[in-house]
Amino acid sequence: MTEIIKLNHVNYSVNNSKILDDINLTINKGDFLTFSGPSGSGKSTIMRLIANMISPNSGEILYQNKDINDYEPTEYRREVSYCFQQPTLFGETVKDNLEFPFKVRNKKIDNELLIQKLEMANLNKNFINQKVIDLSGGQRQRIALLRNLMFLPSVLILDEVTTGLDKDNKEIIHNLVTDLNKNHDVTVLAITHDQSELNDSKSIVNIESGKIVEGK
Image 1: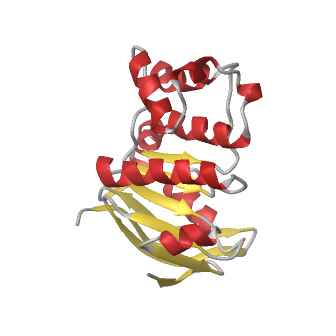
Image 2 (image 1 turned 120 degrees about the vertical axis):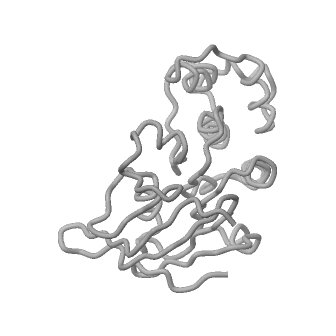
């Protein structure tokens, strides 16, 4: 197995309150790890640290055997992509959001790829001109996820992205992410409280009171 991310003795505190306590974790390329634990246990903090959105008070985080702080931030976040629980869309239409990754990379927009991505999330080509304001919660989450996947990252972080979604939308997102992991070698790190998702998980990292306490 090829190691892709490693946390060595990572600690994180806020105002002298310890959030994470000596976290050691090795993530291999192609892993699909599900992070579980009570609210406030430190799961999202670990993800934000891995995404280089915040920095540890001590310890180190390596990506491909190199300290994440040695990467140019924008390039790193294209490799390690974070998808939030509450999706943020912008512009007026679905197209505005799916074109954005091309524009920030100064690449020609590939309209065929836009349609392919929509179809991956069970949305037809006519959906491209749908107004953002008219989307349901599940549709918004799928579009936000597709925007992150227009150029596939090496690591995809999912922070409770299926919370509040109905069964059908959960299944669509689950199938999409599973396909990325199995067929496109995307490493997936997912936080969930959903018991059905936990039951289906092959590898669980359980966080309690800022510590890794068990795995499966």
